[in-house]
Amino acid sequence: MTTTTTFGRRGLAALAAAFLVSVALPADPALAAKVKDKSGSHATQQQAPDVSVEVAIPTIDAVDSSMDEAALADILKGNIAGHAEALAALDATSITVPSIVLSVRAVTDGEAEDTTVTFSDLVLSDVANGVAGSFSLGGVALDSKDATLSYGTLAASDLNIGGLLGFYGLVAAAEPGGGLQTIYTDFTADGGTVEAEDVSCTIGGVSVGEFKARPLKNSLLDMIVLAQTLEETQDTPDPVLVGKLLRMYADLFTAFESSEANFDGFSCDGTDEEDRPIVVAVDSMTVNGMTPGTYPGISVDGVDISVGDEDTIALDNFTFKPMDLTSVIATLEGAPDAVDQAWLDANARGLIPGMEGLSLSGLNIDVPDPEAPGTRIKASVGAFDLTLGDYRNGIPTTVDTSAANIVADLPADTEDEQLKQLIALGVTSIDAGFRIAASWDEAAQAIDLEEVSVTGADLATVVLAGKITNATEDLFATDPDTALMASMGLAVKSLNLDVTDEGLSDIILKAVAAEQGSDPAAMRPVFAGLAEGTVVGMMAGAADAAKLGKAVNSFVSGAARTLNISIEAKEDPGIGVADFMAAEEDPTLLLGKVTIDATAK
Image 1: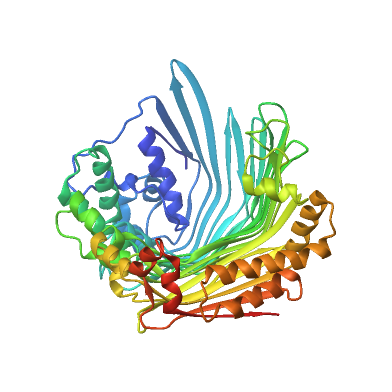
Image 2: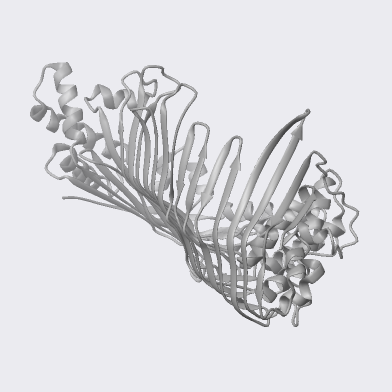
């Protein structure tokens, strides 16, 4: 049997969607809106009269099928909605379509460009009541003037055609918004190749253990038409349509569940405008399992980008951690019938997802400096992590971010004063790290400042910790004035500072001694005495002055490598904003309100 048809761009979308339905992957649902538009929307679809598609289906072999070959051919030509009920209940021992050929002609300014897409060996087996025991597509090939594509076998088990049609709203759901049902299991795609002018790509395989979905409370097709309508009237959107769309999104965010998805990566080779070789490659990518109300985490391994023989960017791993959409869904579900800009502004914080953070490791950069021709940027980051949690009104109340082995060469011609000082001391490269970790203790109404630290390998490490009190829940209020007033009531109860000298003082003294023609060892006690005298003088005879001065002397003299200074407010809740403002005029006012302890080891 040979079936040939010619139609416009939307027909092409329909045919593509028919095959995507077969593999239970997201398709362009506009195909069904063409024949089954329940929205009543007057949105106009953009037409492209200069594009035509001819579809050729030489044969269809349907064994013990509840649908005849003519109906199956009509589906493959895009009329899914017209046969949706029968397709959802399909029975067949097997359905085999050896070849489906799409011939696309695009005419622009009188010039025609032809593209051919061939789907090979489409097979559905053991189909009972709309569920295929197995599905496979032998391959996909595309041939056009500018590119060719060859993709290997796609396969899946337990393909629930009726469930997918129900999700798209093409058949009535027994329980709209009800429980999840398996759409497919054991999905695999072998990968393939893409060839175009100046670029060649190899694409790895994909595998997904299981994908589940449930019928939506509103048709996905209606949702897409509604979104298109709002896009066309984005300057003056209808508040009622905005509210309806937001509630549709709330439903959509809980409509999926899947197991982990794995992608074997890709590699592309080409040339740039200067005929330099370009390589872009990714070893692999993993998408965590999807659950209702959660956006999955994504991990990418082995990113390599190179241009020419010298310019490179490499990254061992980048991970985007999951996002909790619970608060977003609750806000969307609570949206009024009409949503205007005032509502969006008032509820903006409720629309912020609970992002768990991100991380990377093994970043290496060696590229030209665009602001300094003839020089290069060479840097690396061993690891970086950002972890966020315990959100309150869109703000994370637990934050932990850190980085290690931030390595960079210091540019000799830098204008940065701090970098100039390091270079003057003989430091030509740095290996640094940092950590900032804090969390809000709701019961104690306090912020625990676990660590704020900076580390320079062979230089020094500085670690600050402490407790901030009077941190009420108003600090995270959605009203800016309330949050500001709460922040003005914060007080510092305690601070603890640790400084470890890992070689920085030796570098400084060596440089100063060289300038003065002196011995670094002889200068240490001089600097130590000056430091001690300065501390004692600044503390104006406070009881803690002598102990602090002695600890500073020991540290600067080199007798100790670690200096610890702790400050504790004598009275609750601690040192407040008013105290700090008064201390701007007279710093000694704070001395009577705190206890200072110091040790040097």
